[in-house]
Image (cartoon, rainbow, N blue to C red; front, side, top):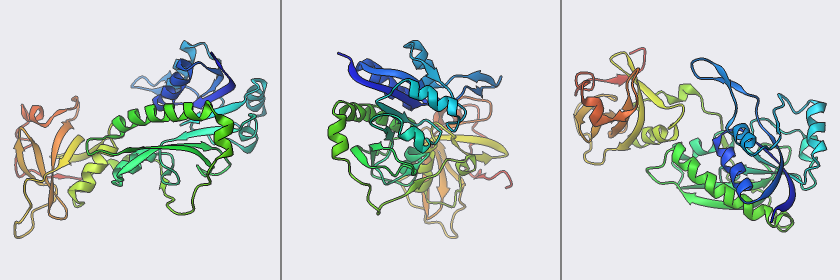
Length: 325
């Protein structure tokens, strides 16, 4: 039986599309979809539809792609759909107050953190990079602030050592879809029991910049490994080796030995190249093992496969560093 709520769904990337797919599969009445305009992508810079738009078209759901929600025409198009609620998942535009107040039950956001931690654009990346033990999703009643609304439901998951942003995003998409279904199936109940976000524990997940992806080998190995995991699959961490830009996809802390050389060994120096990986000196007398990397013009491969044909480049004694080294 179709849920009677008239839902407008606003979202853009694959994470959002997973939530839209869940709503469709669970027979919710999605009367319209709002997503970002098509963007140039790929080497040819051809316009590419968002994951949400592509999915909406498959299910023949009307799609709106306003460049701004300050436009009266866009707002009136939303109003014409007479929505009961708007569900917002990684949409990418700030909703003005008149849009927030337009649906009968307001706007709900699925945010990929346990608020008030990691408000903002990149909560999954920041949680992994910071070494958080847990994260999760929050279903929030949106207000005019940046992820400051009352919480209707939270659901948590442990962050494992083998998590990347890619794999954790997939898990949170499932967690978020289930949590959203729980809220929508008893919306009045959850809104009546909404909890205000605490003032303590607030942190901000600023947008990821490509400059952050360059490795600083003077940092401890655990910090570098977390960043490599957090920036996988994008923007992908990198460093320079003999003038070549090498992308680092997977790494782990080398627990097999501690550096005891005197004088101290050089950060970024390769000290082992073997089937188990490329072992590199880091700061704080630590080492990491590169398990997967990507050489210029090549696909990502295991360290063992990279050594085949590139043994000289990855030889013991060579140094990772910056482009200016």
